[in-house]
Image (tube, rainbow, N blue to C red; front, side, top):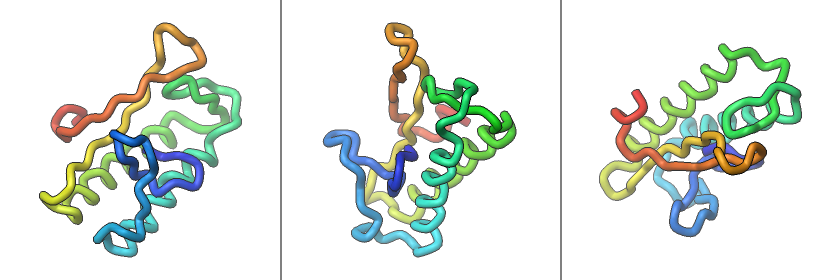
Length: 115
């Protein structure tokens, strides 16, 4: 899941970011993860409401969909590169029905669940 200056990888138990330096990922994959996270922050601070209540404007639906597709591509890539020694899920934000300014985060572990 992307976040400001993030590796885009998180430990779901501790909710701490996982540092890329300690993972056996290709340098190109690490750079792509950091770029994917940075792209979301380029979208923030704008006026249209997007996923999870994030305020976004001047960003087309196509750009948001492309960002989501890239995230899912990276999910598959990281799963493949890390292999069976790691469990890799995909963080999904959705609106919180009890808080119009909040979001609910869930982790999808099976790629077929969102494809």
